[in-house]
Image (tube, rainbow, N blue to C red; front, side, top):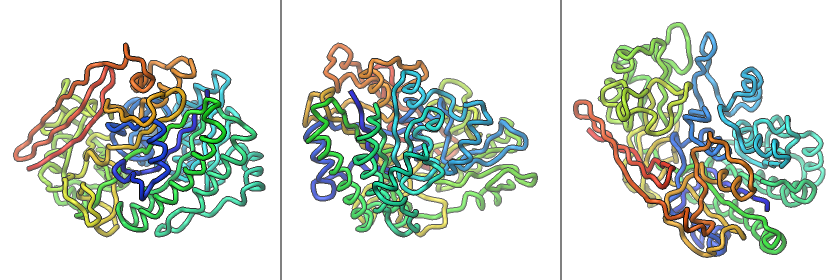
Length: 490
């Protein structure tokens, strides 16, 4: 049994339709759609994809955001995880502990199996899918970045067969050429000559186009259709050649998108309150504001009192959504008004002193899509953002098909998440599942009635400070817990 995981970066499940994505709809008719599927918090790419390959959350694997402050060194340093060379350096410096838990690539390598990665995401994201690939002789090909490719001879073969690596397109252009290149490299080279046990084929769109043109814009819809067409080549290959041979297909996305409607400045708000904020550690900075759509605040002096002062400041702002600090008890954070960051499984040693989401709402954007929010970047209003706790940011695509998933054309209404795919794959490959994995085996998709009928239980947590109130919604099934949404008002 072999697996092909196909990812569409940033694809909202409600954008799958016969008109826009006929091939994804064709897969739905051949497999099982996970209708209650979610990503993790923060709903950022380079937190979510590590969760895919580790089967656990950011609080365990340690990739707490697309960017974070590393305070394990002196002086602390700002880490930008899109940099593939930096990630390799950090892994070597830490003795192989860039991620705090085993990854799929490591687990397969120990069992004498192979993971292949082909991706058009950033160089750092591509490395995250199998960050030790060069140590195991596994194939990892980027659709644009040579520094993320290994081994060299396979890249040379791919370029000879498919053509030179296409350049990364400018910001405002959709990445069509890269999606074509990795699809051809998989079908014409990687599968034919290497037969990996698991392949990750990651389309870096529609995420990038959504950020520059809007989640429901015509140009974003065009790139969704283009990616679907490339996936159609894979689906044709599977139906005509590999389905009968036990190849299983899993389609996923790492997060959804909502629309940024009101631009704010967190740095200005903190400066007005008497803090000395900056975007990287420095002698004159008392709080680092990590750039991004999910708020990450690192204090130079993170006493309980300073954390509380910081939380008081941001909860007075109209843009402030859910707020988390390190736990004071089973529910609350150490700062009044905050919840413990363990409730969203973001309590790693690298976690910020205060993490927050920009306040979301259920407004309908100009494209007819539900979900809006405040945002803090240099872009105009009306563009796609993600990272926070709106239900549409957390909603992710999940479709499975193959002989292991016999209920073709069905819909699963059981809660599931991005952490569940690897535990399910390891179960089907009869490989041991590390106890570090918080994801579950999706027994209900395998027709395992005795283990599929676990009780589903929901819970909510509230916290208040003055006029500010936040609510966090979670759902449990068996031993797994999923974050459903976080809201705030006041």
